[in-house]
Length: 181
Image (cartoon, rainbow, N blue to C red; front, side):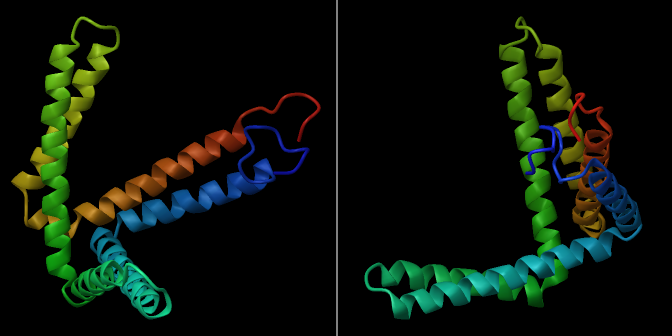
């Protein structure tokens, strides 16, 4: 970070941050139009990452003394997981969507229980809201599963890109203190 960059300046120049934010917004909205393509791409990237990790752990088995069995076991797990993600992309999307749907629903129910336990405390309405949103999203994903696997992963990534772009744009547009920037 340069000395003339204020504390709210993420990327050297607020103008550069704004341009990058707009690009991220455009890409996010474009990818929202192709959720299956984005989801399948994300699964493929994850597959390649796991294969590379497996190969690195395999190299570690032969180049380092001690704990070779753990390195070998992790290498095999990473290689198998990577191969499954690459060779069975559609089935992997089904499994990932199911796991995330169950996690959202379970997390929402647990948050609801916590919210009931803390209902007299300040901010409890937000806990109930958070629980309701998680339960709604988890229920929606599971209710429409397996069809939801065609759009869910890509939609989540695209929405994340959009919110990240908006956040970066608003951060770039935040007025800077006098004498800086």
